Structures are given as structure tokens and as C-alpha cells.
Length: 403
Image (cartoon, rainbow, N blue to C red):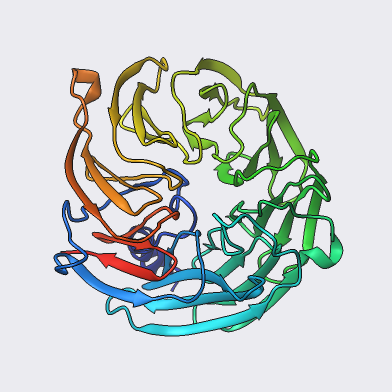
């Protein structure tokens, strides 16, 4: 009997991994998808627009895809205290369910942002929706509430006037939130089943908008937290600090990339070699000519691709940090781009999209724009990729782009 169970799991897991986009920047935190989305589309004519869904309120957060459901968060109301989480059928765009909660913490934020700034995360069974008010809701894929934590009740000084935007991450049996501000500043690991706190660590009392990153090592799940001054690794189950590494001129609205090596948005980009014995990593290179600003770098096919606020794309050699080429796209940019089928997909804050054919920079190729279009609405969230479709959201709409 056990042989049949093993066979079923072996067949099911690759299908799940290919269909789901479980968190900010995808399942592996690298913004790379094994997919082939369309290279062109048009919102007005409907070309390659499979469907469009209306959304309530505001939402700089990114969509995720879980079990053929597209999940988005939003916030609404004069005080941005109505917290929404919605699910749509990925095939048809039909709204399957929506849930609304009331914020328990601070909802004050910059007009450019909103309380629904953090991107939700999932372990494939549960959905963890986090908000700038430091409310964390856990639901199943059918929208049933499993547990709810108003972290502001425990830590009322957590928050800043600009708003919080760090997205949660699932690391094994722990969901991790990074809440760093000028007041109560901490990171916490909560049990995915109960919401009870496994651990909590103090963090520097400075505003920070980067998100935690999880990866599985030989010793178990680890979580990386980046702050203004350093990059720190923790055991995801216990919160035990494993190492820290001092950073220079860290970018606190961007997030570290774990792709075999670590690529931290600091002093431009800093590349680190991970140690096998959980000691501090070693410096490989840093390059201040690779600028990221709000978006996070993407490491693909031996290159680091960084998109700065003005919309300038820099391609650098991942081994050396040497700049291979730069390409001016369209800014301003907040959203991290995604890469699929050798193409980079980006959307500016003004809703102008570009598709870049990346080619083979090591062989002398330079990226070229192969498509440009406009959504006509402000877009701040990173696209999600599921199958051969792109899911992109503005405040008002969610689009599925597919042939």
C-alpha cells in the first residue's frame, strides 16, 4: 500500500509546483517560472486577455495562485480598516469567495501605499494574509477562517507613518513575519496550524520594508532577514540565530535573493557564498553599479537582473558582478519583474508593461524590448505566473493574460 502512496505523491508534487505560485516572487523566491506566457496582449481589444475581475478598495500586494485559485488581498474604507481577501477561479475568473475583517492595528500609511501592501503566502493548503496593520489571517483554500492574530494587540507600537509592506513567508511548519519599525520592532515565527508563537526576536528600531526569505538546508528550514545594517539567518523552527553578516548601504525596500548563493541588495548588489556549517557567509563581490531601488533582483541563467526605480534594467554577471549591459525601460518601478521562457516581464507603477527578450548575455547578446503596452491603471504588485498565464493586478482589476 505504501508503494502506491509514494507513487501518487511523486506524480502529484511536480504538477502542484508547476501550477502554484505560493508567495511573493514565486515558490522559490526567485521570480522565475517554468512557463511560456504570451509575448503580447491588449487590454482594450481583449487580445490574450483570458478574463478580468473587479477588485474592491486598494491593493499594492501581488496575487498568488493556490490549487487553481488566484488569491488577492485588498483594503478599503476611509481609514483603510476593512481588510479583504478574495479568491478567483484561475480558469474562468469567477469569484469563488471573499472574506472581510476589521483591522486591529495602525492603518495610517502613505497615500502611495495601502494597508493591503504585503503579499499573502501559502503552504499549498493554508493561506496566510498579512496586512500593514499587523493583522495575520489564516484561511483554508475554500475561505474558511482557521485562525487570526492581531499582532498589534501584543505589540501596539509596531508600525510607521509610511506603512508596513513586508510579506510573510512559509518555512516548513512555521510562517514568519518581519515587523520592523521605529517602535516595537521584531520578527516572529508562528505555528502554521494554530497561529501560536514559536519564537520572537527583537530587531533594530528602524523602518524596514524588505521581506523574509526561507530556504531548506541540510539542517532544516532557515529564514533570512535583511535589515538596514545586516543580513541574519535563523532556524525557522526555533528562532535560534545561526549567523549574521554586516551589510553596507542596504536597500530596505528590496529583498535578498537565495539562488545557490545569496544576492543581497546592499552597496548595489552584494553576492555571498553560503557556508556548509551554518557559519557566516563569505563575500564574493559587491557592485554599486547594479541598483535595485524598490524592486528585487532576479538571478537567471548566470546573470543578475536588477530594475531600478527609474526603469533602467541592469544585467550583470552573477559570478563577478561585472555589468554586461543596461537597457532603459519605463519607470517609475516598484514591482519586481518575473522571468519566463527567457523573457523578462515588468510593469511600471503607471501600468506600462514591457517584455524583454534576454538572449545570452555571456555570448554578447543584449536584451531587447519585444513588446510594450499599457494597462491604464496604477500597478505596484509583482505578476504571478501559473501554467502559461500571467496574473497582474491593479487597485481596481485582476487580469489573466493567456493565449
